[in-house]
Every structure is written in C-alpha cells, then in structure tokens.
Image 1 (cartoon, one colour):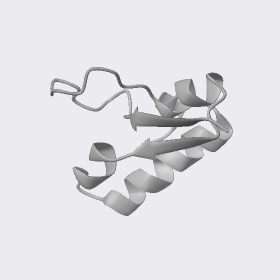
Image 2 (cartoon, helix red, strand yellow):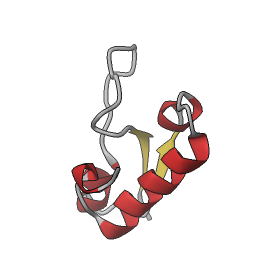
Image 3 (spheres, helix red, strand yellow):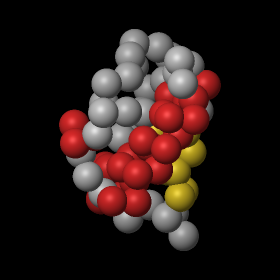
Image 4 (spheres, helix red, strand yellow):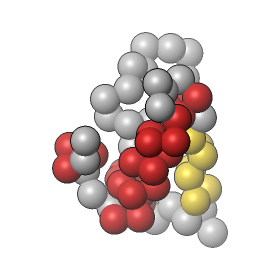
Length: 68
C-alpha cells in the first residue's frame, strides 16, 4: 500500500510553501494506492465538484486536461 500526500491539480497555484506536489494522474503512475488531497479541495469554489474531478482523474489515470 502506498499513500501519496500533496496532491494538486496541474492547474492549481503551487506558489506556496509546499515543496513537493504531484497530480492525481502522476500519483497513479507512481503506483499509489491512496492519495491525500487538501488545498485543492478546500480552496475550491466548488469543493464537491473538485473532489469528484480529482477522484475521476486518479481512478481513470488520465491527464486532467480531459476534464472540465
């Protein structure tokens, strides 16, 4: 089992103090079993929609450009 923290969407602003971040698709490529997503969801205008987008990208292992 592998858990990957610091998950962000590629479109997120990463100009904060977080040193290492990765996308849901990259985490899946790195064989992560689970991901930890925080700021991407909590800072979103629509947290539920963002959560669904992150999960879909992770489960389908696709680039987020395929999702609106």
